[in-house]
Image (cartoon, rainbow, N blue to C red; front, side):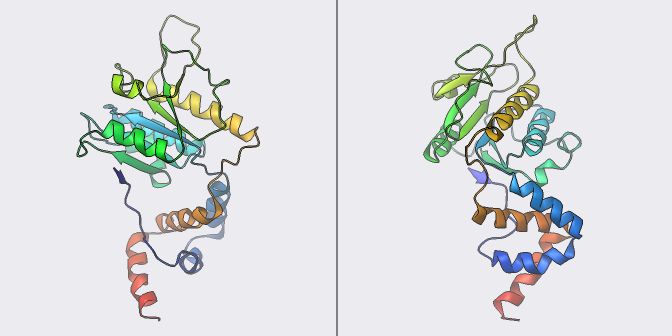
Length: 237
């Protein structure tokens, strides 16, 4: 498993925010703060071995639009690639947690990671009707698994799911495209979360770290400027 490389590690976050926030416009800082107030890891879409890069980009874009901070990616036969024109820059603001083929069993690594972190594992599957987007229990965090194009969820993953969710169909076609399914489900679940008493937002202590990363990503050559600033902190300047 690997998380998208962070721009910082064990640095004085609040001090860095105070220093660099003046490098972006007040309007930009306000936008980052407002978006962050509604950010959540309560629902995490997890993509299994997608091979069409536009689908991965569309799901990451949807996650950002719905205010979800993390996307899980399972690599089996296909390496994760992104279509920048589809993602529209959403990859800058969303964490991608990759379970890659270098691991002996990336599917089980993903299953174990989310289960150990308190998530209910839910498979998005048109042929299973445990729950609809409106009836799926949301009393616990959900890792929402989407299968590969055409084949759907791998049998090994299906056996690990706690439940399934399907979108009711009214036509002849059996299912939506995977990225469309993700958009429908994530938006429906977001609306239900906001209408509930669930504490689904990112904890305040983590928000500061996310805010710093977003500030750095909003600056020209932000990562390089952060690296140059760090020695001055170490030297006490």
